[in-house]
Length: 101
Image (tube, rainbow, N blue to C red):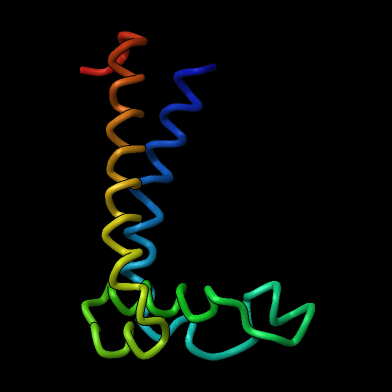
């Protein structure tokens, strides 16, 4: 059961970035706000625009990313590092269970 969970976690770590690459860069730009602060309080928080900025960075659109949130250029490499670390740890867990090639 633990091995199944590890496989599911690794699959999510691969599928989510691919899905974000397949979606157009403008996918989150319009429509209903996704921020809880905007939905409940009607006021933007300090992180508003980060999702849109990161989405544009994934599609190599630096100008739009900075427009939506200037700190997205700092957050993106940190998030990519954490994502890679989570994937690496998942692979190590598979090796420890003895099921990886």
